[in-house]
Image 1 (cartoon, protein in one colour):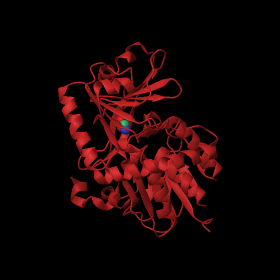
Image 2 (cartoon, protein in one colour):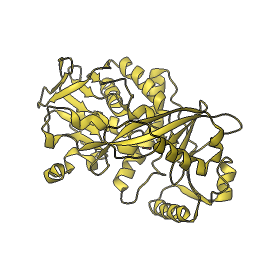
Image 3 (spheres, helix red, strand yellow):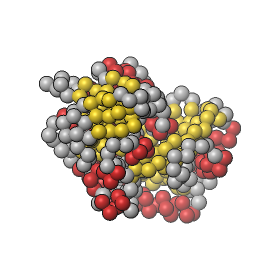
Length: 378
Ligand code: GLY
């Protein structure tokens, strides 16, 4: 039915690749262009936490509902991805332990816990001893913890490898090392121009270029997605026995996400540094200190690597998903700290919106047009 429909996707992070996969499965001819390698920016660096419950923020209930709905969809999304790609994405469902290690952090954790319970979120309050019983490598200084048992996690690097295979198997055309320098809006035949001067047209252009989404020419400057880079420094340690960690552990200043291939990912800073991706001694020191305070056994672990990536943050730090005011151009960007968890709902609902006349109730609060022109000029 949709054989004649063509989509051009700008950006090969988890959001662009997942939308491409969903559109290709719906019969669209999809061309996806990525300036580097797919997932090479923030997607592959992400710790892969699907932590909708642990990460709920005060005054962010619509964002919570989006993350929660997406988390509900993750098991089926991962199963389909694994079956279509033949790759394992290390889906883990142990849950998240948020811990406090002093009086102030215990008071703050209790406030979050009370808020979570008011919202009907399935969390348990644990004493320090109960938390240590569950996760013996926690610091004995832990005084309290909240267990979010419905939170899950994936290995985002493995997800990206699986998406590449699934996307191409569904008929998608992937062009890596292909930088889009401008987008030409048009109600029926929008297109893009690459750095090499090639023009590619479609029925829709999807702008999913993460922190780089605002910098692509062609769209009027006030209509571009108001997205900025927010630097995150993150590192990987090699797990060596007797050290072991079963749960994602979050403390006041760092988180640790254990993976099934003997790695633990430790993150992350959130820095307003523009497009600076340098790994700094101070950034890594802060992350390691925050992690060591809650799980001191990491001190002995070999370090695999430290990297920095740029999360796309919008003006209200919530995503921009839907038709933009640039004709024929659909935005899917600005997911900030929640890109991995929000992938299934973003990709599936965006594909439905581009494929049909339906408007997604899930995406309605996150439309690109929610900022006024004076917000955008400020
Ligand atoms: N979602 C974790 C982070 O952005 O650091």
